[in-house]
Image (cartoon, rainbow, N blue to C red; front, side, top):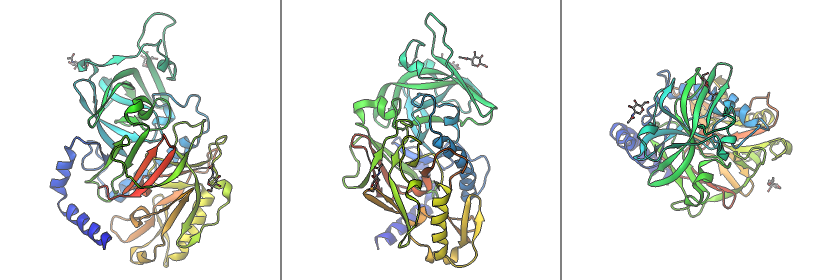
Length: 432
Ligand SMILES: *[C@@H]1O[C@H](CO)[C@@H](O)[C@H](O)[C@H]1NC(C)=O
Ligand SMILES: *[C@@H]1O[C@H](CO)[C@@H](O)[C@H](O)[C@H]1NC(C)=O
Ligand SMILES: *[C@@H]1O[C@H](CO)[C@@H](O)[C@H](O)[C@H]1NC(C)=O
């Protein structure tokens, strides 16, 4: 009954999307919008159906998962993303304000990154630019002598004398950017984080640099949570809007106030080699009532190799290492009758008239089970005739076994990160 009411409510919202969508776009709260959604200034490169957009975006996942799987970055807690770190972020944006008076900036939320950067005025190759340091009374660049500057790779500082902390980074053969390590007030909703350290982009070249600002919500020393100290007490949560309803927005809640009082939790695990990442202890997967048989070492957390499972806001569809994915998929297929076909990254599609047979998928974490809602399990073709299991195998060419719980499986759930108590909470919430 509750579900039916929720669905009805949802349908009403859908049918009034135009006005609701516009109103919600102008709100000043910490809403999270899909990057190609109605309220985002960034438009999809091609006008295409939503499922095709998801399929296109999911094509970038293997590169991101490969990056996330790499064991030792030379320096992992840099405030500015390294070449590989800038690749393939980015599905959800939030509005923030930088400087005094505050200037509106759109930033991609990235929970696996500590970096912050924004395209600054005068930046060549940035489109759009978002922030004019010269009109902010609180802006300052950081000098080469400052300790944060030594964390930045690609640095070129003179041997003596004062100099702004400038740096260049290149990647992928054809793309690069340069930036000035800077400090200014960051406004998130009603909060102000003074002297927030970020990279002010001054030039980008090549086709691979995403145009948005980046807000690193990782665990490392330069992330928002570390830089904001007591303001947020190491606690934040988000609820990602549904992929199907891109007129709507989810929300980011920073700090302990307003977080769910009762929520199921599992311990967060810390990997000193990858301090930005949120590792969790995934102990098994069930399909229907069947606990999928997988070798424990394919799920086990191993800080020395980087193996284990992370929860990530920048990967589109959940990726399990191939043997785990195949075992889960094969069990899933046993429940579905008719021909199995594939669509983009999805290898288990079937006629949607058979959807009632879809088994419930449960992720078992240490101390917490997550029963995936059906919209977080299946994705539909644009014509609606096919339903596909919305997960895939991780790329096999990486040097550690990393499983990534991704966006599509997180929609309409509140995901709570409590770094003080080292816990991750997950609860149902209609967050659109
Ligand atoms: C700030 O810099 C931008 C771009 O460099 C320039 O167009 C603008 O006129 C400057 N504004 C002020 C107040 O100096
Ligand atoms: C960054 O690259 C530009 C163009 O290649 C160059 O002019 C500039 O000196 C470089 N800056 C640093 C800090 O290396
Ligand atoms: C993961 O959870 C299992 C089951 O509760 C437990 O035996 C194991 O020690 C946990 N692993 C870590 C790294 O905490």
